[in-house]
Image (cartoon, rainbow, N blue to C red):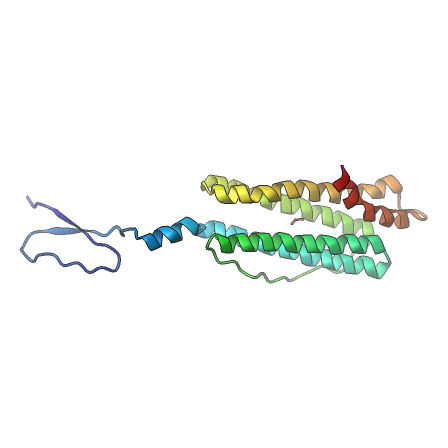
Length: 210
Ligand code: FEO
């Protein structure tokens, strides 16, 4: 029967063992150093880093889409809708930066997103506003998926961080829904579109005052 001898083999440390004919086993489990502890405390899991970078891209895409919507509205003479979507584009960029900074703060690698395939053409103001609402619903779903992933991996910091976005999406969806409702409430005939444009300019303020 061999007697076993365990020798701890720490990171970057060559250890010798006696050449005495006995059987030695190396405990190759890396020893945790203070440097590792500092890194572990601040890093995200690779999976979460990827999920957050995906969301950075989604927010950036949203910003670009809203810019294009503002451009379409401006071209068609909908002044208030132009301002509305310009503000929306700014907000999406702020969301993107918020997540970007969070990834950096947690010791991860934030990736500057590429934006492509931005839609510039719409058949009507109504179609444009409905697309904006669909976009917000889709963002809400992806925010919820991040919270779900954070909870599954016990990443309480990310769960906590994302709660701001959960609340923000309630507001963003409500505003986008209200804009779409205006088309049925006011109607598009006659000066309808002019009135809808006027009301779009008031939706954000009305929501904030509630
Ligand atoms: Fe940042 Fe409107 O979602």
